Length: 291
Image 1: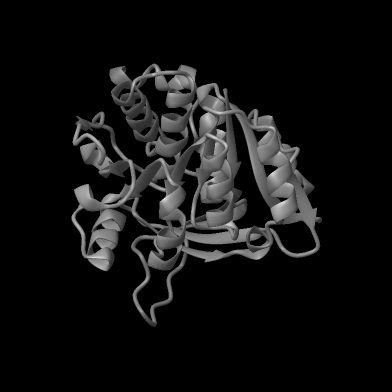
Image 2: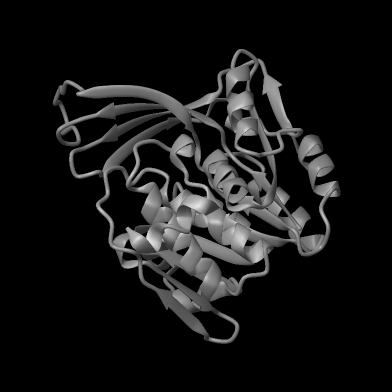
């Protein structure tokens, strides 16, 4: 089976700070680095490093061939990653001494997805393949409908949170993935409790507390705990979880086993600085229980 991901590609610029900036405050960074990121590419890299076959659908600027090379080096197929006249999306990421982060995004070419290119990619898919989506590109709802109509499992990460985007995509989603804050925002905006969200399955990541999945069709619930680790950078933890979870289902693991595997991968990720470049391999994740 195969995972297709209509996903963002960003160049991440990291600034290590003593604390996150307050309005009007100027801070000196103790460290600066540049890496590969974007919620989409993070999830593609995570799924590929977990062992899945992954096609990334997206766009970068023509001057950033190193970005394509880096993504491919992690085992992701970039046949449908277009090079456009514009700037590759980028993120400014502040990370404080407690490993918390604040992120500012510029969409760049991520907002220039092409429906024809997407359709060509999805033509390759077979029923029971998987489509991943997030809120950092255009054409999300159209792509989700195209995939669901073809029989794919559609896993949608409702981040960065936008109620308008969620409402458009939700009718075409198999599994809705959110963190705890996003779940609260969605329930508040829709005036519904989590069990009444009109989607077959809901998966909520809970950080150091683990994760919770429920079927809104049967009422079945699964909860898993997270390994105890010392976090130094929580950036891309949720994307690592989503990519490993999707890969787990693609490899025919049960929901619970896929959640446990994804939680272990995310726990290892937060012990490392960086985003896509810091996502662990399946072999590395197998050591998490001993951390």
